[in-house]
Every structure is written in C-alpha cells, then in structure tokens.
Image (tube, rainbow, N blue to C red; front, side, top):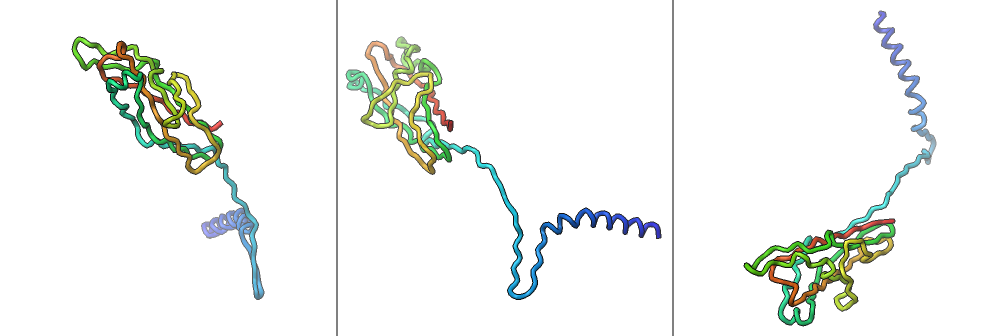
Length: 180
C-alpha cells in the first residue's frame, strides 16, 4: 500500500508543475465554426554574412616575349571575383611579400631575387588604370548588400631587359573581404 501512495503523490506533484505550461499551449473552441488562436513569437539574429568566390586559385602570368620586354610589360587576364553579402562590403588586394620568389632555371644566369611586388600591377578593367601591388591592403572594389557582384581582375607584369633574368617567379596575392 505504501508504494502505491508514494507513486500517486509523485504523479500529483509532477502534474501540478506540468499544468501551467500545458495550459499556456492549449486552446479550446466549441461551436460551429470553431476557431482557436494561440499567440506566440519567434526570434532570430542574422549577423553579417560575406563571401568571395575566386574562379581560379592561381593565375599563370603570360610569359614575356621580346616585344613585351621592349614595351616594358605584358598583360594577363586574372580570375573572376564574385562577392555575396548581406551588408556593405569591401574587397582589398595586397602582396604577401615585398619581393617575388625567384628560382634559378639557367646555369650562369641567376633568377632576380630582388624583383619587387610593384612589378605586378592590377586593375578591374582590361584597358583601365593599373595600380602597382603593395604589401598594404588597397581597396579593389566595394558595394552594398548583394546576392552576386562579379569583378574581373587583370594584371600587368613589368619587365626590364637588364634586370629580369631567366627564372621561375611567383608572388602570393592576398584578397581580403570585409564588412564594416
């Protein structure tokens, strides 16, 4: 007998605590037509969301010809950059180092280890103004909230007959997307 009473007491206590919350979520209607409305709410916080997609992780610059050395540069079409953001955004560009990495390819003609990052210029228009790459973030493009904003990147590489010796040259370019 005692066990049954104890269980009944526990059920009564749990039932007393459960009733208020159950009552708040119940609705009763009678008659025809019957309607029952329950007030409620939902909430969420949407933070800033920004994304940049780059069509290619690396760009092979156009190898220089004698005509390019005479002109002092040649041009290469770089990747397509696509930004999606739910707020204002800015895309910056910079070099990861002040100098290109140079690897020797010809005996007796060492690759130029002092080729500056500024020998790579960039633009957002193939026939636009080209800017020398620096190691400091420079605004490439910016905009407001958008599902898709595409920008093409173009490069000009500077060449000098007496300085740019044979070799394999590379330079890491850093793109930084921010939403202030």
